[in-house]
Image (spheres, each protein chain N blue to C red):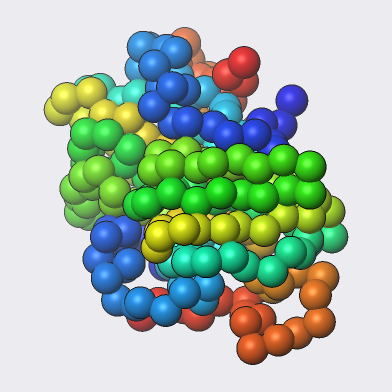
Length: 124
Length: 124
């Protein structure tokens, strides 16, 4: 499965799931995966040693917290979190986000695995 | 320049240019570049031997033509064109698109270089 060569309607894909912090994989290209996730509340502080991670807000808004500052992201805003940089997404209300990151990236990064830990689930 | 670690507002980035078929590079991650482009009319038929290419419609709509079919893409729709597959984007009206593709990708792919040929221009 690679999600290539077909139209993917983000709103349709987002309508297929309702749980939070559990990215769905919608496509793969050049070793990267495109994922959709819904955020609410605060995720755990973490970093990814070797992977840059892109976040694009599809609906709603959230704040990307860094240890020294915060960046507020609204619909149509994106940020690339560089490898090795500690971060924590926080959403006051539910927010839908597209992620682009290397295939196999573990969402909790350098943390010990927990019930939140996932590399994403392919959306049928 | 890598466009990382800062908020990028797509609407602001799109407002900085008005020419067509000339992608602006807004960020780089894991060897891929995120670009914004404006389409109008028909581009040339081409393919990329070793590079998959993602298109996400930010504003407007366009049709991705393949040799055997066409896929209409509206705002919030995306498609990944697999490496080696001939394609041609066609937009009846101006359309704004986000692309994700390997750094250095040449927009005209396998074609002989023309005045359209570019690897993209970094947006300041």
